[in-house]
Length: 339
Image (cartoon, rainbow, N blue to C red; front, side, top):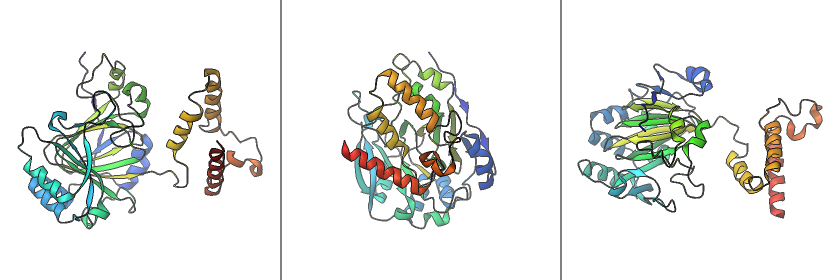
């Protein structure tokens, strides 16, 4: 079965912060922002040549090591699992940035290079001064830029627990996105072993095995894709699944992650793990009861669960405040300590 081409990601131009907050983010859909970073000196270097891009980055790099991943030529740039899903097909390590940048330039013409990537480098710490020359007006000033550098690598379909704006600095990148509700059709891998933190889809979008993963055809009907050139930007909404293919031998991308939820809230992932521990093994009739309780109390399926209570006795059903969260966290810790 041959899958059709996915529809293109919507494109917008001349976006500003007001447009992002009032129109783009509330729509809950990804957008491509052509030319968002066209005035960046980093992008101008990236458009000139890989050598110019690397030379520009080296103006800012520090000698301290950063995390790096390397895969053998056999993986063809696809950072993923071994066939039995019990190990990853690449190695993690640390290196100063400059030697790996030099390696990317040396390997440009190699027919079977090692797959190399430095991911999520905190720019203010490791490339001080870069952010001052390449500014991002779409996010708050305290959102730090992160740099992703590598060669022709393929990042498996995954999701981030944050909202995301990014700009391609050098090389071309293909983004393929799926909405969060397609989770069942994307066949997520293990929680305990992941390439980068959150589970990834086991389906290779470039060569999907529909005999093994037949529902992926349903997910593909909702896929959106775009190829970004240097200077182009993208907005990826919270928890949207995305696969990223770097299409050139030297590739650099700068992104900004943020979460508008109050920082004092507990981590939803902790609740999910607690659900695995406390709810998933219950008999089906009991799981149905708890599903109804979560819908009512947590997700507001029936409106405000505490609307019938006087404000001074609503307790946890009232507005969420830092003080209430602190008390609930203490209660949970005490309960877990008794188990």
